[in-house]
Image (cartoon, rainbow, N blue to C red; front, side, top):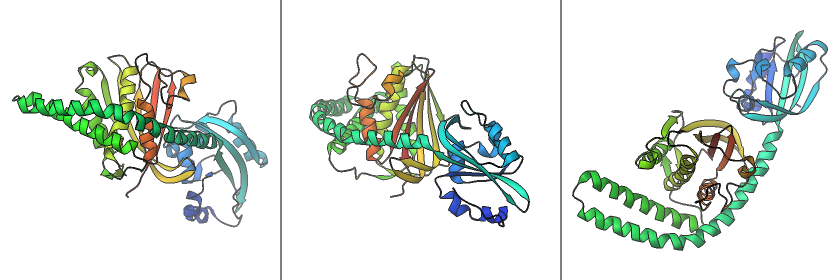
Length: 358
C-alpha cells in the first residue's frame, strides 16, 4: 500500500504523477464528497474512458454497494479490503479487483484513498499464455497444409493470368487483378507462416487502410450484399510497424467468421481504439491498439469460447476450423493477442497489438 505523508499537500501529490502513473495499481484520491482529486493512468485504464465525467459512486458492483463502504470510511476511518470485487466499468467492461479503501488527513482535511489491483488480469495473463503456447502447434499444422494449398493456388494464379490476357472489358479485368493480387498475397503469407522465423516483411502501416481494404474485399462478394458494414475508427491511432499481409489475412478470417454467423441483413462493426498500460502475457505495454470486430449473429456457445482458437474446432457443419487458428497464430507472431467474448447474440473478436515504430 502506498503511503502519503500527512504534511504533504494535494498539489505536491499530483506533482508526483510520473511515479504514480507508472504503477500497475490503480490509485484514486477522493475528497470527502467523493469527488476525484487525483486518478493515475492505471485507474483510468481500469475504470474506463468515461472516468473523468462519471463519479465513482456511479460504479455498480456485483453484490456490494461501493457507496456504502465509502460512506463508512468517511465516518469512522477504518481501512477496508474488498476481495474479488466484481463490476462493469464505465465502458461496460467486466473487471475483478482487490480494493483497499483507506483515509488520511492533510491540514485537517480528510481524503479517501482507493487502491485497486486487478485480480482478473492475473487470470487473463494465464489465459493469454495458454493461447501463446498454441502457436507452435498451429505453425506445425500450417507447415503440413502449406503444400496442399500451394498446388491449387498456383493453378488459380496461372488461370487468372491467362484470363487477364483475354479480357478486354476493364470492368471485368479488375476482378482478375484482385484474384492475382490476393493469390500472391496468400502465397506470401503461407511461406511466412510455415517458416520457423518471424516475418521480416514489416513496414509502417495505417491500420484503418488495412481494415478498409478487407471490408472492400467482402463487399465485392454478392453473398454479402445485405450485410451492413459499419466502421468506428479512432483517428488518433498512430501507424504501426507490422506485416501488412499477415494482418490482412487475420482480419479476413475473423470477418469471414462474423459473416457466417449473421443473417444476410446483419451488421458487422469494425472498431479501433488505443489502450494505455496493457498487459499481454507477462509483458506490460505502454500503448496497444485494439481492433474489435463485432457482429450481431447467433453468438458462440460459452463452452466453445475457450477452444475456438484450437485447430479443427468449429461451430459450422462445413468448416475446417482453421480460420481463427491461423488468425491467432498471425497476431501472436506480431506480439499481440486475440480475445473473444460472446453474449446475448453479440460476438466481439478483439485483436490487441502493441504499438511499435520498429
